[in-house]
Image (cartoon, rainbow, N blue to C red; front, top):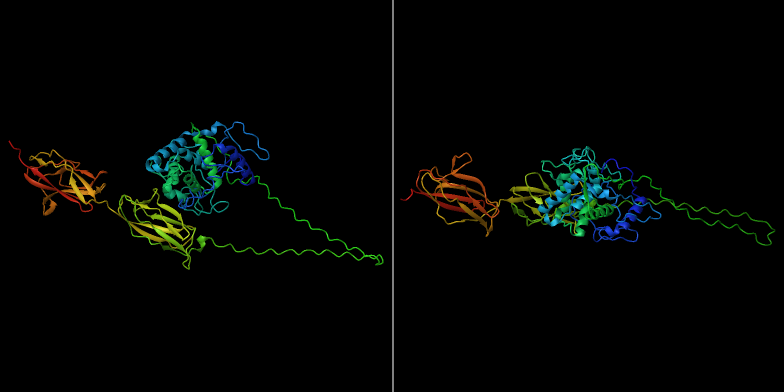
Length: 565
């Protein structure tokens, strides 16, 4: 959030009253499936818990956000007795700065291609951008979409917010002691480290750039195959961005508002919110309840015949002040009881490049006595740059809450194109203790069969060129073998696979003679088409041998003979 917020709305009683009145008035225009109770609070959808696999904490570290609500449908809302009505504005609120709007729409288009099942609407990004930064402070961005000055949230030092020690050495937030949310979409550095994206194609992932931040936010919301067309899944994604029911309600209000219509306004002219979630200015002190009244003791009455003398009234006894009981010690949280992680029968992790691993990593959190601990967050991290493997959804970090048996199962791993071994590390979030490392192996794509796509004889005259190019198709266990590595060599004989020094040849980029081709790859249909072949002055029958990863081999005859009269 911006450092300056203008006039603010306090978070306490006033915020509740204002929000309740506004949400009640907005009830007819809220997101599908959202209703209000008698106090004007949203009920359906608002209480949805975050997905158990909903990411590494929250995108923002549950930082500050704007609480302004969109304008009411009615231009003349009825006055509310006893509460201050919410501040509403006119149609200007529907205006989104041009560059910011373009970033949201480009992010939607990108996600439509990369994660079509997510069904991400750009209006959801706009709603979050409004709540997080007021659309990048009303569109104060340069032509490339980078904010003129950093948009920083509060210092996350535990004073009213989460306590998150520095994770980026101050690179993004300028604070080398604690983290702060950064940029138009308010990512904390530790989340940006794995969720960041390059949305404008400049080769950088900058949280202060609205194109990068919008695309990152889209991927963050869509991870783990969440579908934004399913209300419960959308709610879970929003809550994983900032785990607050009030935050969810505010974002859903703006989402529905933008869905009803919006328009582009020049950069720097967007309206700025004025209320935020942590404002406590003007808060009334909590009234102290009056002490219960005690009946005064009755004076003793003289009995008849006692000579009219009156005994002094006994002093009322002063009740002793009860001693304040010592507070009971706070019981440890589930996380604090964890002593170690145990493997939960994870099988050997192996997959072919481009495939999804059939096995999943599973761990169990246990106490020192070996008892399972439920409701503990376990983080799974793909370590290092030696692999391009990811979890389902394209992320390299996933956080899962242990079930009643203390078990946490990581999302499925998806192998990239880089082959070899890589490491996945499981650690307990919020606990300093040894983690568990798992080795996963990505094997090259394979083919077990090669066949020519044509049976035409390959012939040429001395010094000429072959009319037909060699084309083969690779399969593996009967299925198309795409992206399989291959080599092709003109060999000396069927029993001698060394390169021939005469006969047919290929040409390299400089026109020089080559008789061995490497770095060949089959296409998406498993087809490999070799470059054109030429013949020197040697006649005879020659052999071209093609080999692929996985052991598939095909030998093709090439005949060079003088032309017949």
